[in-house]
Length: 116
Image (cartoon, rainbow, N blue to C red):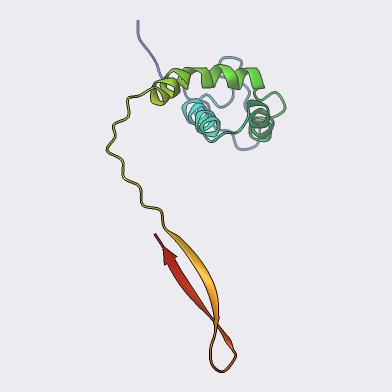
């Protein structure tokens, strides 16, 4: 018929464990976004699963589950890599070079030279 909102009760002296609402249901979207962003930065699925274990507990998330989650963006990544590039890019490379120059007094003084 439609969706309903269910909230987990807050208890002060005891923990509430529901068989209907799994842990972290409220933050599921943020967790999926976190996993996706970590994947895009180059963290392997195994390292990510190991790191998320400290957040989610011992039975947190497996490397294969991370792969399933990250598969939802692989199409977008491939689309980005295959996009048409225009030849309108101009590059200017700048670098700094530090040189020590000795003066008449024999003391060295450092100068920064900007190279383009």
